[in-house]
Length: 336
Ligand code: HEM
Image (cartoon, rainbow, N blue to C red; front, top):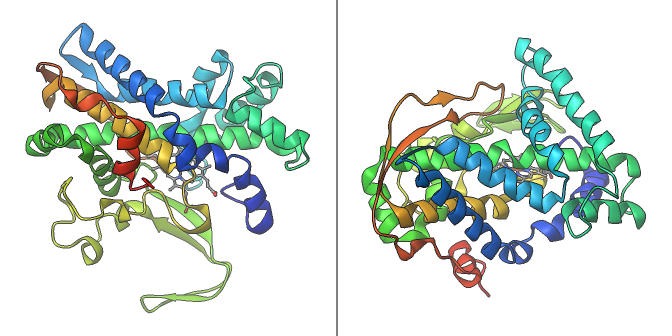
């Protein structure tokens, strides 16, 4: 999907557009909020320390598995194959070479495991098979499309949520602000994405000769779009571009979700999950501190934490975890 253009791209993108539209995502608010509260309670149950990356991984994989309607045995192979799928977009280095067989094994595995009989019919995968049955999608595109959605939705959101927790732990005043005004959870997520874009960049082929800031780029040249760098551009964000500020005006202007016809298809779902986790944490923890050594994910494209040890100071349970569909719409600016 990401590498298609024109009509083919429109055809592929249309298959799940209704499932990812704000209206459909509003229906998930209750389930996703409850899931986040349960996972945060579990993470804080045994000790006052937890791995934020593991919490985000559980949250996102549970959501994606449920929405895709995939059999449980696909969870681990999908999680294992998603990051290498991003590695192969990178430069042709040793990491790409190591990732290529893993990424293709994941697609082979999905071909063998996913059938009309093994998926839940009321799901994204059900909708993909329905599009095939109605002649809107080639049978040969069904599994690659499912694989594109699962790869695109896993590590990106996991790294984004983990980064938001890292930033809030590093900036206690911003954490206090979020606890006082939980509706700023979406802004906190966007600030984290702006500063540390989970996908740092993508390559593109230039379709027509163009000029960017006095630099001529010819048709057919390959360019590298640096989403991560754009988020810190002082011309756009001002002298405090490097600061984490959840009160920043329109923090969602960053390019961490790309732009144009290929703009990320999962923005509303990513926001919903991040908001639910941040608000569930804000309702329980008066303070977060990074305790121990965080470990970076090493990937040709992805940036973020694979392990983020967080010490939490617990307080009485606050009201900030509860978001309902109306509050979700207001926070997103989608209320009618
Ligand atoms: C924080 C989380 C996420 C980030 C940072 C992110 C980032 C991106 C970026 C940079 C692109 C490329 C855009 C371009 O080329 O202009 C993209 C495309 C895409 N994303 Fe996301 N994404 C996230 C979450 C999700 C989720 C949750 C889903 C699925 C539900 C998803 C599905 C897709 C798809 C299908 C595309 C390809 C769109 C197309 O080619 O038309 N993403 N995403």
